[in-house]
Length: 289
Image (tube, rainbow, N blue to C red; front, side, top):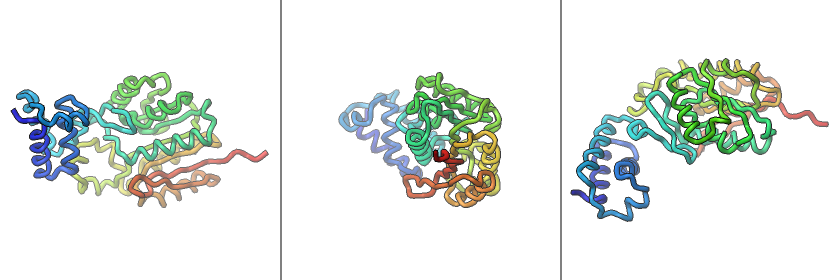
């Protein structure tokens, strides 16, 4: 039977030869999951034998990954902002870029809003990643999480219950903000923003994800445009909007914001790569006494 060291080396070599990005890291994650061991243990127990059953399971995972199926779908989970989330092919896999959206939503909520009465809408919730993380860190807030996909809401429901925030997050089925029962103070959204023509040119893993969660129309702005229009009647007077988007779309979105919210201030937050990623629209500031 091969040792843990040999299993890691072989897995790394196979993935690298298949052109898998981050082959070394993915090899480690695969072996960790098959062996059911934390990362530090796979390095501390390099001579541990890998059983025949574990070899077979690892081989199956590798074969699926060689077909460029995303590792998150193979394993059934993805870590996001420090928590593990169930993911299925019915939902978009959470990206590190979206953590910028969560961080700024938390910053705005804790520094500039009445947290005890805060009402938030996570529009297009998918896995529920944004809503549940906001619920964890803002326990007094009330959060609505909307999605047009019933299958996505099933995944979100599982994640929200698993992380014990079901009492703070209400799931709503419908188009963007239409199912919201009341105006909100903060809108956060990671909507489809990839231009239709660009999707086939992206890496093979992207093609496994639901098209409805990726395709933003000709310019990638269809859903963002509709959300900004809907928000004009569903955002409280002192409320704010945070929208994740492609850096190239920021000027278009800022122009839309000026049309629907002429009194608002806008700003842009950069992601970890230094790219403009999150547009902020602050509808108003409290009047001075």
